[in-house]
Image 1: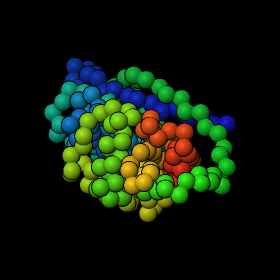
Image 2: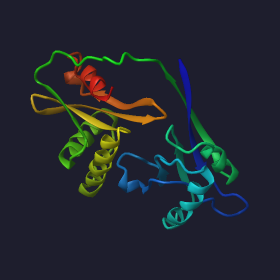
Image 3: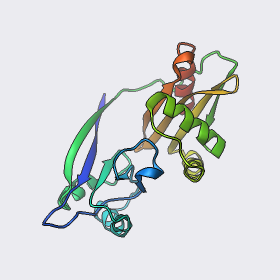
Image 4: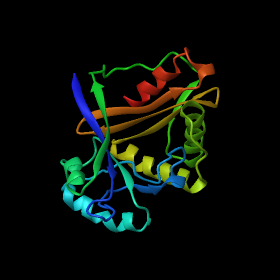
Length: 212
């Protein structure tokens, strides 16, 4: 059994000035449907030193002209990234502990001939992922530009074997969505859900098998 911590840092004023030393994947709220905070850093993926990544992102953060930002430090972040944020005056808002256990490598898809699982590597699949995700988790409709960015990013991630999102279709209808991120040889499963009317049929097992 493994234990991982995900740290959410909020950059707050320090010494009378806004703290803006935050990292990659910066977006305004309208670019990430369903997120209420004004500026968020959803993830950081880099093998470079934390301080270098943090400093490089300052100019991007300043460009948004907002007084604060929320930063998620996940498994893919550089070592010591949370400490680097604290050193810049960031304040810890929340900690989520992720408990992990070994899964069988031969996770089998359900015997459901009408089920198809597709990676979110095309804009139309990204649209289906967004639509299903809204129904399950809430949020709002993403723009066509954002969906194109998601599809392009997932094409790169899938090709590199570092993760991505998948959509389950039953008789051609999108009914489930889920994601996976691979960091340091660990597969982190996230955002998995099936529309209520289609639960109990093995759809989620199909999503799990595709990601594993």
